[in-house]
Image 1 (cartoon, rainbow, N blue to C red):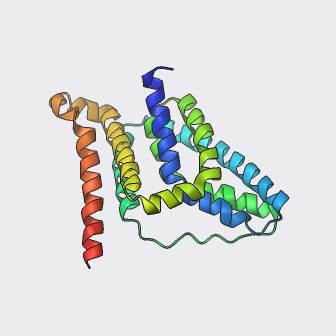
Image 2: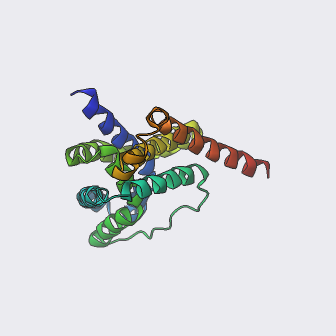
Image 3: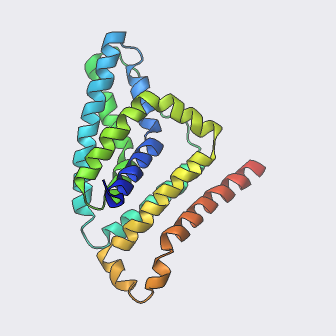
Length: 220
């Protein structure tokens, strides 16, 4: 596998792991009151259906991003999501547990669809229109999220720089989405040299915005 294929797959896996922490929490909360044998079923079936729905949603997003200016809009929205990831101080999501296998599965799938918008948008941008990369990245990363979610969340709490790295990956993906918009490509012909460093400028601006916001909040 050459680097052109490996790079987007690695980015997709990184995005999934970074943005998938909340989804892993949802799975744990939704299935925690089930008997052990049903809990495993709920996790496996719910996760399988969630992967399928995410592939479908990402495929739809890929077609939508072909519309002029939507990649630009999607990139700007993804930058906002990256900044929000750094300064997110919302309360932990409230998901009711269930003692019904069907209800737990329904909760897992529905919550994944609702909470996975940022993930779908980021993956669509990182895949550069290749659905095979989307499926490959999801199949690799989702089991990591499910079984390693507690480790991932603890690492992010103990090593804050991991969150900044994650936000940087999102910002880089957002910058590439913006540059790939057909109409933006027309504009950048005049300033092509500047555009080669554009993704890195976006990453720097995003990370610094989050850093200074968090620093100012801590001082208060």
